[in-house]
Image 1 (tube, one colour):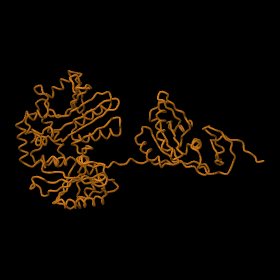
Image 2 (tube, one colour; image 1 turned 180 degrees about the vertical axis):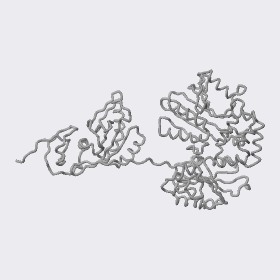
Image 3 (cartoon, helix red, strand yellow; image 1 turned 30 degrees about the vertical axis):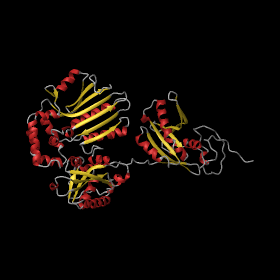
Image 4 (cartoon, one colour; image 1 turned 135 degrees about the horizontal axis):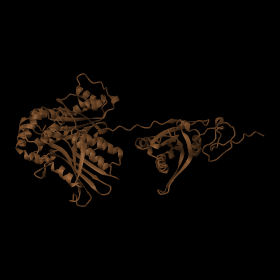
Length: 575
């Protein structure tokens, strides 16, 4: 009769796992079995529960310092009507709670994220823990169905989430490799690196576009977006009537040589902000054949669209912006090249977001601030208003429209008097709150009372003459001068707010808010404090009326008319 070894307490097993397993005791008691020292078979047919119990005795293969709390740790929340069992609950060497979710088959892998999210929430409620006290590990022998969703969840989840691929040897030994989760897919967008190319005929422009595509591909810029624009009036004023406005899409830095050429201007802000894209544009400009090459920047395309002598006739694109991809419409192309969808043009921005969708909200705020570049007053006030509405409970639907030209002279020359509403700076923002109330904000330029006299003289102090203004305008640096001009004229950017919830909006009983910048900080004065509100309001009034930009220009009509005549007679400022 064969000798029989004494029974040993082991984790659930249907086969022997090798000599090294016989002196291990189970820490996840589900069943106890007696085993005999036997030839080690393959273990590929282990059930998930068996694999779990085996892993529980070898947590160090995942991370050093992991200690077992319990297998199949029960969680229940009666008010929520839900329950669950954590495969393995452990603590790490820093004392954090670690949820380990094990998946054995590809078909069951799809359940992993649902269960992980559920167990983390229940554990947090059960033990009254902060999110940073809970971690989660997804452990699987097959990651083909898990890699994409786990990578996505790990980037945005409030808990630390990691993945491990588990290996079971023929001798029952376990090993695990940490899974390298997918990096975030880079956004493809049109950067602030732009250029203009002028041609003698449409055929030459088509040939030039093919050449630009070829050069761009060679220097690593595979994502391009361009607009065709034709001269339709005052033909003798320009040497070439067919233009191509080009925007360079995002470029991977490794795809281009970032060493600048000797003749490049290192002071160009694009060279610092977008070095790879700027280097690609320099490569194109050095080799392209056309009548003329001009520099450009987001917002300049808007000037062309506003000029009746130029007309945009179509769009072209490559890579992510190919016209045949069916993802974008013509209005999307225009927003991208104008910089409006990201605020890169620092002139116009149109967008909407919900503060509860955190990742989009951060991008939304950043892009809004980009559009307000060069305008510290509105940048301070709009940011303060966005922070205020984001603190309100529940979902908040926020929409924002910005027009921030930072060029008062342009506003006067183009807009006065009939089209001032189109050309003057403005902000329109709304926030719809969960309780049905809403906040509506209008941003405008207002004067401190009557404002400073001598408008024409002040413009000459800042710009000297129309040529100086034109130089700053096409150099994209007018904003550096505009703030000083506004200060000399006594003009300031303010926000006017109305908060209410009635069907008649606005109503006399609705709260009014006046947002001002004082000593570099935002200040909101509410009509709920009538004394302070009246004092702040009166500081922006003349003869009892709010002194808006239109009122200010009307009060200085003769100087405004003289300024407009001087600048229009000197140069074609619309181009």
